Image 1: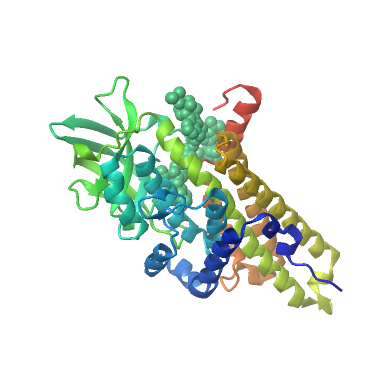
Image 2: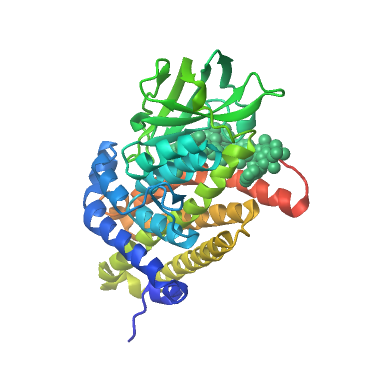
Length: 391
Ligand code: TGC
Ligand code: FAD
């Protein structure tokens, strides 16, 4: 009997270029050889394997979609495939690359001066400078427009006060992109500021005891009369649309990434169900198990094809924020459902870190919430469909 793999069932390769396949395979090999053997232990210990950063940089994965400034300048499909493979390893690995490239580097690329771009982007692409992106505050997550972090001009400096919460890479960053309202703007507008580690009044306490994204460093950013040179304002940034423009980049990557996690769960569930014997036969021979595997495969196929289509639109400059929300929401929902089903198919073994589903399932709870919660993306799409703002 012919056995068809999930990859052959979808056959995405039929519409990918040779370069896209080559890059995907390179990252896939890196994850299989260098990341999968170490991830469970890092997850358990709540540590991020920083030693992989130079290798990520050497493969051109940091700021990969940026053109120039020492970055690879790959298209949106290639970027998506990269993130999908990284998240096959762990959402923490994909988060690290997303935040570095789509958020911190992209903010500088899009809103920075030429001098800022020339100075920071090549260093960040080489992994010498790690960035983070501080938008969320303790009291304002879904509603960043209401943020309280403020900046005011003082001679040749800006002075920042406030705090950011749940910031990926903050504890290990050398450079934070901080979003704050500028007192001198009328009305006060949200602007981006570059804050370097070592600046007095800049602290990044680690958030401990996370049960999700344990292999990703998450922290606060505390700004107490933090004085930065006036040259550290991102001059092109103005208003909430600036950080949201960065989120458009990152959210599409997250959609791809989540399906990487889903694929890892599917692969594990399929392999387990074929070798696990109950009632004298492999559980994969049972109709209820097959029905679950088919639902998982269909979900993965639908999300992957949606992500592929929207990424091709992005490369033609035709992608809208509504479509980005559709991709993020659909992919993460599918991935969580797949992870939960895969966890259950593993029975008791499914709650052990010996198998990937429980780790991905826990990670995906964060992915469901960050970069716009599932509900916020419903409201974005709903506003588009109905014309009514239900926030
Ligand atoms: P609203 O009035 O809708 O918009 C304000 C201004 O922004 C413009 N705009 C956009 N611009 C670019 N891209 C988009 N997607 C945009 N959506 C809106 C809009 O045109 C307007 O411009 P202007 O010129 O008229 O001022 O704003 P609102 O206050 O009603 O809020 C809208 C809402 C709720 C959708 C937005 O605030 C939102 O997306 N909230 C969710 C917050 C969020 O996603 N935070 C993510 C933090 S970063 C993160 O989670 C990183 S995790 C990374 C990892 O580890 O991988
Ligand atoms: P809230 O906004 O308080 O939402 C609570 C609940 O209310 C949610 O279910 C939400 O959907 C719902 N809700 C809110 N408003 C509405 C509404 N109008 N209608 C209906 N329901 C609503 N942020 C950064 O800036 N940078 C980062 O690097 C970053 N990394 C993160 C890493 C991790 C591991 C996590 C977990 C979060 C990270 N975040 C980051 C923060 C993330 O973006 C926020 O958690 C997210 O935007 C939601 O904000 P909140 O947690 O304050 O939830």
